[in-house]
Length: 212
Image (cartoon, rainbow, N blue to C red; front, side, top):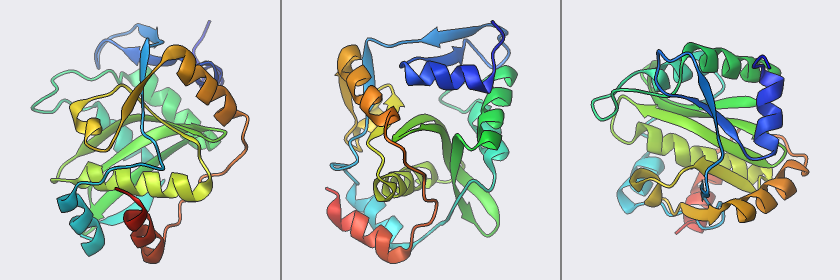
């Protein structure tokens, strides 16, 4: 079966997602983890130092203005990650989802320079986080908090991080079993919401004050 953006959406709806072994690998694997990382939007933990940076507004945060740049940056090797799972096929498919309105990026900018960001897929009231990158300290973390604030404002129910990692654990990510995840997913994808990319400073401050 030929991979297409439509096939990806059907896969996300039943709880699986694609990955390649490396940037240059040709084969795509479908992943269905026993344990799934989920970031609860009602109990997000924001470290104190990061909270101060968010209040200062050190970065300009935009949504969906540089999706192609974000996914390409996420596909590049970093000092701590020599290989990535984003091959050219995956890059093409997610750009297709973006053009269809099902994939989104949150970007952090400073002086017109893209400093960090993340991208993911929306389906109903579920957001499936795919990857993030940073070129300045905290740039991707700021993007993650801004994403969570927008998701909560828009009525999203599920922020799927795929896996629990030390980086994400500091924000309160928890692991749930496959069946628990599928129940949450089934409810979320049946709920029609739209991601509101706008977030005023007052809304951001209110979100920070409501978080741990």
